Image (tube, rainbow, N blue to C red; front, side, top):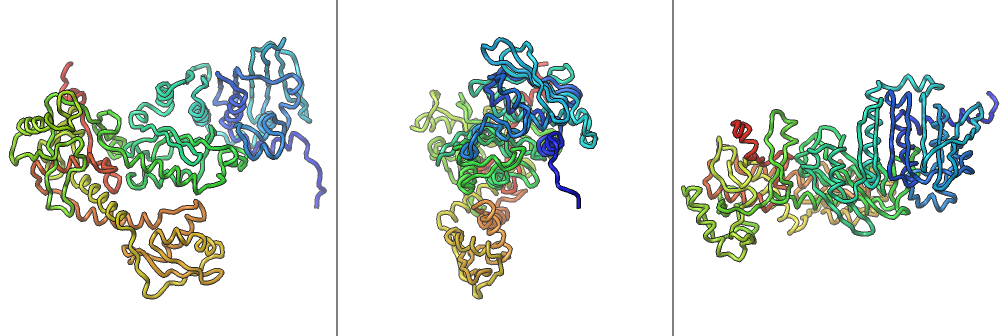
Length: 620
């Protein structure tokens, strides 16, 4: 056996660099975090050959004192923590004191800096086998410049794993975008091979923040995004979530920040997916830019050297807060609350899923709407849900023309206390029905143009939501098993089942501990009588152990209700009268999540007059 010996500093730093410095993007991430921690208000990045040849990061932060420079490139040297208690409530982005030493061990690094009021600046280079820091005076404005040249020049095995220049720069650019979204008050500029790529000015208000968001995530995201800001239990969640119709084929537009730090956390992803479950098409991913703020002591960021992972002190509370906030925001989306952006699908499922579901209620001078009429052919009839806007006394006559419907609606609306516009009329967001196409779609007209509604998908959602509301009002009914089921589980799972007995009871299940590694299932929800009990219980225990909460049982029940709603909804080729079509439109406007059916498909689309004019070359 070979003798144990102490590694020399360069080799030790290169080993550490394997954890911190994976590619040029990793270097940029660490340097940007240092600049932000230094209080920079402006950060400039110059990149050459994807970051392999040169990475230069210049900021106008506080700079580094001359006396501190010899330690700046040393391992485990930092100004951000000093005692163990500091590590338990880290408020800065960096704190490990390894980044600069690791980077300098696999590149040619030069750090130049100057503080406010200093006579001259100083530069520091790490050279020689022992990586001694060499200082020299240099002219430099307030702030710090770090130049990293020839990355991995002395570790060819690492360099050969790098991808093409374009790929490496794309990764690097993504890091810059993430940091730009984490600090709206800081300006960022990025140049690659002398070409300007990004120039983002500081954003001091929500409008400017949304402009930056559009520049980073694309204008289509902002057109489909809803702004949220909720605070409870010492937690604050704010940011933007995209409508379900803007779902993505990949999880490439998901940015989540904890106290300004970009993280990829399984608990967070699970909470977001759970909130979108009822409205997202299978195989699709939601898009969002969200910021969670909480006490630094309530989250542990010292989990991984890259600091992409965190651990919450009370994960269950955080999970429930994120889920309930997003769940309520998505449930409250109505045709009159989504962003005003008309669109028309243009070929393929991909464009269909990116299609906006839009329009808000707007006052009309002469257009009106039919009010809901009874629709007795379906399991649940269409009934008006929003009498504060739509006059329930108006019943459109069978065969009545649109003009007659307008006049009748305006006549009643003008004398109604619910009239909210000065001209005495409000147009429903989905307008009024004109005709039925092929027994499948409803064609309606609103202020913005034409609305197309998939009548089966729309009625399916309405029926589904009513069934869920009825179930919530009655509670989950349970039934005892004729023969209680004994399950062999691990001791950890048995402890979890015993600890969360009240949670199971709320979900309609009664589970008792039989032994150290055994539990007994005595009651199940009635609606789940034909479900695989063993698999369901094990899945629930898995969720409780990992996330502190579960929605497995709720999801199983919802799947059954969804199937029942699907089979009980109006089918294609069912001819509807105008009152029935208008009744469906009114119920859509009053139903939660009515923009998607139970399976996540869009229920309606808006085609604006501008789009129609393009088709017929009007105004050209």
